[in-house]
Image (tube, rainbow, N blue to C red; front, side, top):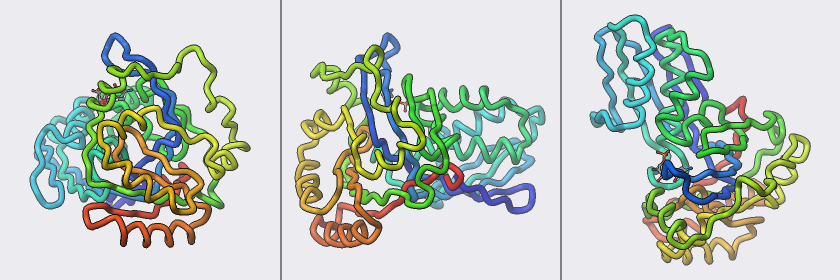
Length: 306
Ligand code: C5P
């Protein structure tokens, strides 16, 4: 995330979206979650947050100009962190501008929560060690710990075990990806339940992972040739939401190296051979897919820019 400090009492943060380049999912665990083996990448589509430290003991959150409630992940992140502050009079005024669509598999809410934890821990000068902050992030959601790092990372467990890969692997030539946002909400628990019903899980615990060979020198080539791309949740989501198939078929007619779905959907991704090819494809797709579908060109973000 990019943090811009304004005086000592306020910060502006750009919280990036993510895509899953690889997502293998194992059977359900006793706690209902699924073990995953996944490759996450932050991309250049951002929510914007403005956070200001106050002295009235209140957390006040506005989302796109409208007062947001205590169930919002940003609010919950602020409230959870405040428990670690010694000064009980501290509060925060937070303005969130959403650019990352919700329910799209792009992790916007999780990224906002991670950005809130990092920015407020500095503004409030909370003395919390990185391990405790990561645990707090994991309590908020499986994807939140990843966004404390950003960039390219292998995520395991239910997503909370994060292994960041080298920063500089694609800094000179970040992959260009066309995101197609179909305007369909594909709820994560519904998709996981359907996978369980169909019993189409992969093996994430005993089989060796294709991500293990993703050494830093190898990463860029394997990303740009799309060899690593896979999503276990894709077929089941397509069966649940058949309208996604029409969009995929249209994307397959472009020059994309690979077309795939991120997370539990509904965003479809096209890995483009170049930025120019991505721009050209996005114009054609936007013109043909209709008003309810949004098309955005993004680039992978190395960690130092995330
Ligand atoms: O952790 P988070 O609150 O983001 O997860 C939302 C839902 O997604 C969970 O309630 C669960 O149904 C599903 N999930 C899962 N396995 C994971 C991550 C999420 O089953 N590894």
